[in-house]
Length: 206
Image (tube, rainbow, N blue to C red; front, side, top):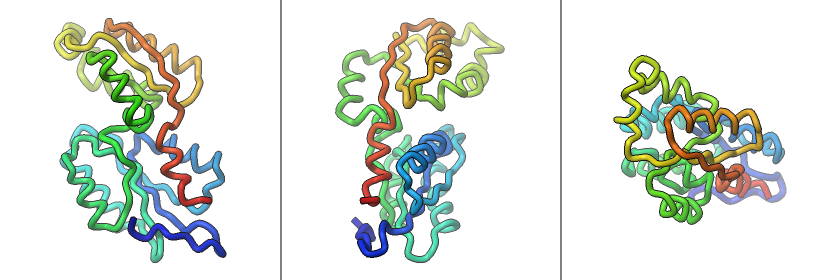
């Protein structure tokens, strides 16, 4: 991996973390609880999920604008529909990206997510971020507040909502259950914690 050796006499190497706005809260929580003072965190807008063709260049721009001399760069961002374009940028910029096609996979763990998907193909996944912003992202974003009849068109191929929870929060779980009710889908809960995101960020801190 490019530029990942640590100077053991001086501690972990200063590191810039470029992440998605939808993961920023979780990344900052990992930094805080693990005492990762060598990590600086910056984020690109979460709304880019609706324009995946723009993600790779947005990440490149953020790296070039924020990187300081001598810093390594970690990209806490799944491929998210870029079709490999993000990995090309990561390689060109000498950075390192967390593996995974989307955040559901690295939250649940790659193998565990594959098992979960095979268990029920018609699953609609929610994370803590998506639960917090369900009304804005899904109800308003898809126009279900104005055209509730569109629900069946959007979600006819789904059978359940699977809430992949990063933290234990009864209020969030209640909102996730309500989201499933709104979509007229069954509900399942999986406590994932931060999954593979935490070891990805903490790997250089030893």
